[in-house]
Image 1 (cartoon, rainbow over the protein chains, first blue to last red):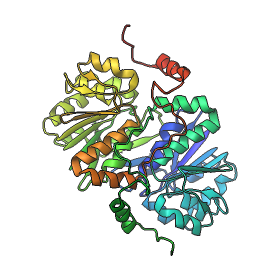
Image 2: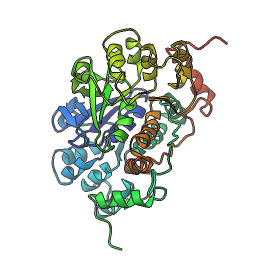
Image 3: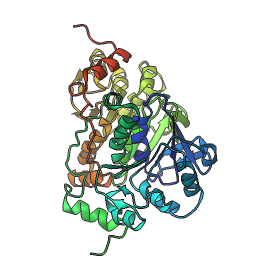
Image 4: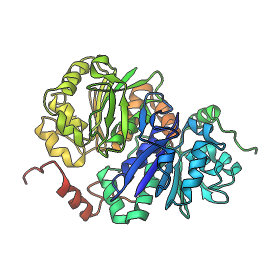
Length: 213
Length: 213
């Protein structure tokens, strides 16, 4: 089972590496990081560089695609190497998935038209504009398309995906293996639970326009 | 504020990248991945390579050290480049931290002698043998030494550390920024909650000997 994770300049590292740490434990799974060209790809912090071992052209028929988000997503919203590859490769995938604003790239490529999907909490309106039916869930399954909410949600989505691929017992063993028994010190990870000041600050800094009231 | 994350062959990627995604948002923070030599370092899945931009010698006085774990930890339990660097650099850190079996490296370097600490659930006895006082907590603060439980626990620890460094409000804003509102599909992330079969399977495959009864 080949799992392709496309990387682009200014991706969000945890979007990719959270699911990686889950899916790599699936029996027979082989994760391949790919990009427009094989080589170094830098995340949005500019301090983390992951090596893409393959170019998109080298990975024509992955079983699973997982598209991360991050600020660099904005550079891939029109036809180009990433979208072209996604559209072609999606034809033969078993699962096509995304984390965070990776869903916007899938949607821009036309792969989420009319489908239920989720994305980063500040990008819901943008996802709707791109033709999907946004849902505020931690992750959403719609056929073979699976989308996760922001950044850390990829871990939850990957466990649910692992259960679909290899069964619940395998998924639970993976969860224990990565000791995923989350105990955040604060309850501030969603718009509804975070302090109003945090919501306002992130909304003000957002690159996504809110829908008109 | 310089945050050094040492990498070694067969580290566990999420141990490093979970905290990375939190700490990179601290005001003034600069994360530096380092290793014995600058260059590519491959994780334990053999499919993820992160570039260490610096050698240990290039990062003599980081403010924060974060040591990941993973199977490669076993190669760094005796005096050598990583331990030598840790012992020297620790003298001037504000915080010296670890995720998962990274605590065993800190302990082997003598930095956790008599201190309360935690590690991966299967490595608690090993941590005791190395002179620390193990606690089964998600993360443990003992002075400037902060240790996290297995793999995914680094995210929780990093948020607590962020609050100590920059205040609770900043930490909460980071939590919202990475939408860390965990909703695992299963409740199997700890020895106490996982199915007995999963516990047995991981225990049987463990490289750590259990304490005698």
